[in-house]
Length: 356
Image (cartoon, rainbow, N blue to C red; front, side, top):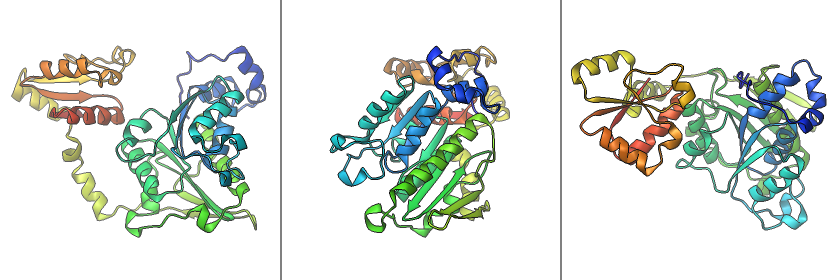
């Protein structure tokens, strides 16, 4: 279940009418609808899979939806990418998607990212969302999604289609397996383009709906989630194969875990206390939580600088001045926020540790 704290979320009068059928369902109800409204979901790819996902999540009452895509709409897209119209040709998919979705649900905040996801921008984009949906057809992009979701502890919903077949799974859910364990990078898989292999348009719609269902179940905390297994479906003969995914820890993964402390400069509480004794007043702890989070559990002698302020030049100058001849320690209750702050400090060549 996502977003257990929904006390400050209120439905508009029109939303009570719009989602009346949801409100009468025991497993959804008012609290469930509020959780949907508070949720933030990112769809990477606004094509055959992305379009039905976007339509059903927007009509389900999600409050925030992000779309990543840098493609233009082509005529060959229209038979399966059901968000677009003939007069949208040669326009950006994300812009047309936003415009058409706003007509369906003006209360949903839609954020567009009109560029290709890559290793450079993935961390910055993905950090702001609760659930990440892979609606791409590129193995390179899938591995980028996998790596970033694993680092940020984000739920990753995977889907893929070809001709009459499709497969879906949920990764990083309750410490479950991840995409690169199912499809290791050393397999050097080749992209299966719709242009080369073909795809029945309705198959992308069916697969996108299956991915959307997993999103709704996770947010509401209901049903059986498809994790640690892969669902393989063929719509022609109505067959479904469920393949269990065993979590295997290879030597390289173990090596990565051993070196994790070095890669991310992590420091434990006991190590921090030892460092404090050794360094006396030469430590500065920067708490990057929001103000309301800090008030509940403030760290003694720490400075509170919320993550959203970290990119401000004045803030960075302040940190440089305040930390002169001192060791910077970053603290946050969520590791992904610490990693983002760490990357910003690294770009400014400021040495630091992350309190873990």
